[in-house]
Amino acid sequence: KAGVTQTPRYLIKTRGQQVTLSCSPISGHRSVSWYQQTPGQGLQFLFEYFSETQRNKGNFPGRFSGRQFSNSRSEMNVSTLELGDSALYLCASSWDGGLRHTEAFFGQGTRLTVV
Amino acid sequence: LAKTTQPISMDSYEGQEVNITCSHNNIATNDYITWYQQFPSQGPRFIIQGYKTKVTNEVASLFIPADRKSSTLSLPRVSLSDTAVYYCLVAPSMDTGRRALTFGSGTRLQVQP
Image: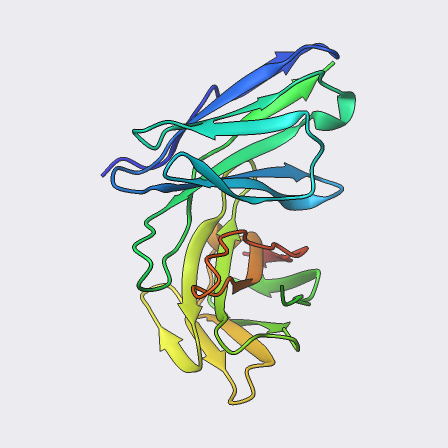
């Protein structure tokens, strides 16, 4: 089956702009998480959505937001972009039946460069 | 969330067995240990997960001692394509519904020919 799809793969934005990234999870997966990866901070959890509700949130400012649609697709938005927001943004989906541990499947990420 | 500690980097040669050890002293009773592999500019990929003793799949083995305060990922006969960063994570407990994965710094494995 198809993996996690993230679009776009690459993006260049200017400081102050906003950006929306998209993630289509694996079919049947209802949990979608977002991560930011930078050379300095490594992989950091942003937030997680399940059944259109944000279930968990990492320690990021309010400029970072997300949402999930009824088909489990998710978007994340970053407003008022800063140079430090340049990073690889990764989306992960997992099946959440609540009965056992499941693995998270990651997409290839969106490389955002803020200039 | 339990913190993990693993070596920053390791070097090996093709055909050798590589063992990467991770310590997680504060692991909770319901926590599982999970290892991910990441290549540059790609998302992490699940390798193996376990709770105790030994788990083996087609890619690797995971050894977990009885006290579960550490774990060892074993990669048999590595090849150049195994050059990657390996992350040890303590998976969130299913009971609390937490789904945030906490990635540490990872171990950068460099396989030489």
